[in-house]
Length: 128
Image 1 (tube, helix red, strand yellow):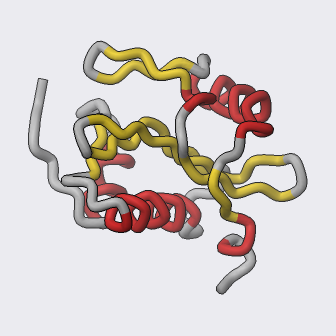
Image 2 (tube, one colour):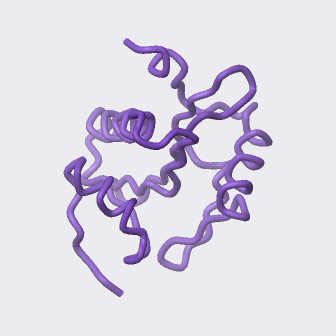
Image 3 (cartoon, helix red, strand yellow):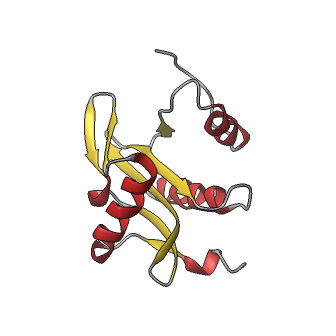
């Protein structure tokens, strides 16, 4: 287990303000919209990697119809494995709970994210 692994834990309710600030800094708002549904990311389950009170990475997801939608994934470190570790935690949780699938939505111009997810076994299945 490396240093970052030991700092990854499930999100708990005491971290809402910290998560809101982190997501807002990255995305401009703690609200994320997917398929017309607004998600308050501070209310979603997920995994967090912290050093003290500083978030290094965060993934949130939503469960609906026995499927797991990844809503946000953010890492302060590119190409260091943190995003992959966070994603793996959600995939493990989905397998543990026997969810039908893990999926997400990104824009078609976000080639960095598309490559990231494809390298980890995700398929590009739809275009709008």
